[in-house]
Length: 111
Length: 113
Image (cartoon, rainbow over all chains, first blue to last red; front, side, top):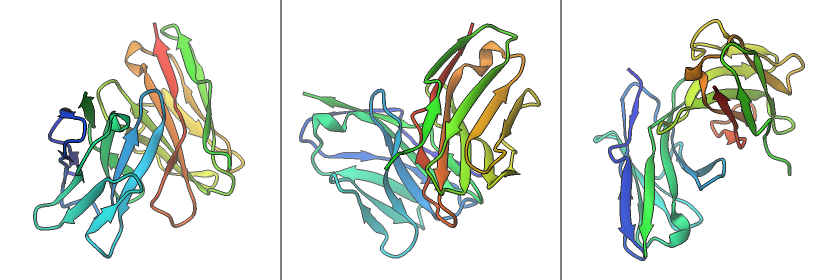
């Protein structure tokens, strides 16, 4: 079955600490992978995407994700988080003609 | 430029009533998608339009749900005989031809009392 699994529903982390949000996908989905972010009271925004080429992709605000085919993972990382990163993060994969989303991980930044 | 817009932003209705949710995609985007996001869940696919036709409606949960896109632009999601379990945020997204990137609207929060 096609699926995207986010292993943590919530991740608390202190400000300026590093963070990793985990994501695994089933091998039955294509390897077009995405991270979307939903800030409080806002719509979904694309954070970064992997379509082909370099397995390490970066966003403009310091996040990066690495496509790992052998582990079927696409974990999201940031070396130092800021209070403004408080949001829900959704890992997603292209599945034929639609996107399949994980259940989301709520990133909670502690002062 | 203008993004995807959805109206209304909030809709409260009573069980058994009919509702219509509207999506106005980015101009020129040929693909349009509807998703439903329940509390604590990620968005779940409902239906995909390429132009005026529904290319994939496999995510519609039952025949109470229907969507149209008569002129290949604005789309309306229609829900008949609403049930409390239909309460969710309904998201619309659009995409240019051949792109895997989808641009999402702010959603319509539907509450069925």
